[in-house]
Length: 438
Image 1 (cartoon, rainbow, N blue to C red):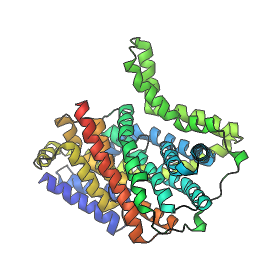
Image 2 (image 1 turned 90 degrees about the vertical axis):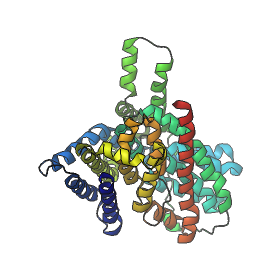
Image 3 (image 1 turned 30 degrees about the vertical axis):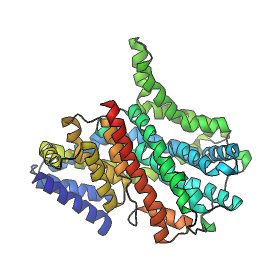
Image 4 (image 1 turned 45 degrees about the vertical axis):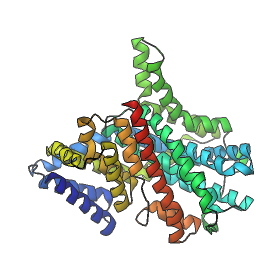
């Protein structure tokens, strides 16, 4: 009965978002309240559960996501992302331009949110396409695969960061495992798959070709790479500390403090404020405007995450988590696969990778503890499932279609298949790693 109730709530969430066009945050609130009442929580305690769930998840994630958005915005507006891409293209020449763009998309995609990265990098793709007279989809899709993979797999992006908190995983370990899976996923779903797309006709609209910053306005190459990758370097460095044989408690405590994702992002933003802001001639008032705009860009994402926390808390407070886990186990499906399947179904239904990942996490959270599942791999499994088959109900689908001026058929043939390949390859990677880390 509990599983049936959850199924009804998920269907209700799908209908509210995709059919009735209700704002996802409001839909989450309505579904959370309905779930609480249906699952027997006293009517006077339902709102308390909703508020607690929102507070618990936002208390841990607000700093990471907001600072990450500010850093990403600065990397974009300063020209650092443009400089990174230019350096890579110049280094490898025309023959390997596609691989250079893939690498650029991957590096830039780590600090940038997907939407910002897409709008920023597509003009670069088009400039290469027009300059060398190359097929737009063949050149562009692999870079977009890089952006998509980092969005779904790697912290500090909102969904994987939220899943790390929900499953009590380790941010640095998840990032390392995510890198191991991301690289083959990008290669196979990007350059390898794009070989079959050379004949897709695409004449990108001139309307969407944004102006690039002049060369003398761009930051230096080292500055751009170092600042964009600083959060990654700090996370990886602190992750290695326990393996260096250091036993001094003071050093270990300092490493734990500096390795906290919130501190990592704060350090990175402080450094970027100088290297990509003040050093480039920007005033603090200009930077403040950029940072404010960044928060505006992710406001809805923050609300969606808060809503997912409310839904999860209602499931926990109702006391049916164990019952749901037992019913799900009757499917005789490995928990990592089950998490992927649920996320994929919700993704295909709703179109939002963030909603899919966070909703699936609330449903399978108890399985992680009961079955001693590696929480870092569950984060990645659900993250992979949340990328499955993007189609007409996903804003990313239409963004790609309109920028590349494609038909719906060709958009499905290229974009939707690419996203599905990333999703399946991600699951396979998770299952392979799981054989070695048990």
